[in-house]
Amino acid sequence: MTTKRITIAIDGYSSCGKSTIAKSLAKKLGYIYIDSGAMYRAVTLYCMKNKIIVDGKFSEAEVLKAMRNIHLSFNVNTVTNNSEIYLNGTNVEKEIRGMDVSELVSPISTIKGVREIVVALQQAFGKEKGIVMDGRDIGTNVFPDAELKLFMTADPDIRAKRRWKELKEKSMNVSLDEVKKNLEMRDHEDTHREHNPLRKADDAVVLDNSHLNLDEQLVFAEKLVQGKIR
Ligand code: DC
Image 1 (tube, rainbow, N blue to C red):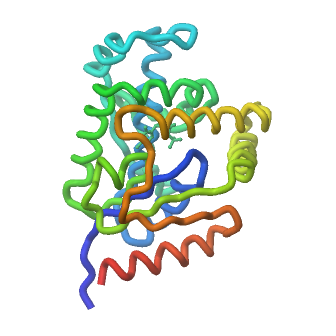
Image 2: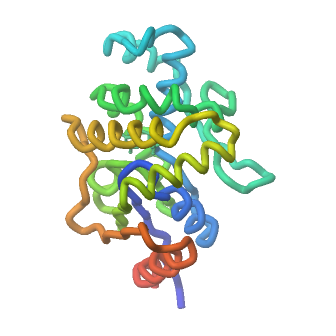
């Protein structure tokens, strides 16, 4: 039986495990994986490093001007086989995960002009299909015609604990309370912003993974994929 190459859009709240599922599906299918949040994080990191954000404050016009000097790309790490983000040719995959970037990325991602540039790039990555992309507006805005859309959610306390454990494992020193507050703040900003807020696409399938392990989630997702590619 022949299989067709499709577009898979995975959206949902912060720290729901979207990237874990997305990476795994991409590897299984031999598809490209793009972490769209990493792109907004890299823009934020650039603005922090170049003093466009100072004491948490910035002017939208200055951020937009800076976009001219920002080049984002992804390369596959040959050891882990995961795609990692590069900012102007430098791998920033680890640096963009810190709490300092997490505190500022949601406000930066609300800027309309920033979103337009980042979304155009995301659409270019996906123009040949055979892509799994995760984020907040992938099924609603970036790829509204995606063949498969997943909307992931989980209990906020469970998400905060998972994220805190992940940061600890990466030796990042942060309290569970800080992580929880950051998640709440980002959920609120991501669902209430004016441009392309996080919402479930009408044709997305909901996956609540509060009480599912990774294998169970993968069985669920792979069944949906099989239904679309055959
Ligand atoms: O997926 P993440 O937590 O790394 O994303 C970081 C932030 O980027 C998130 O709080 C909101 C923003 N984002 C977005 O606005 N649209 C996307 N498609 C992905 C992320």
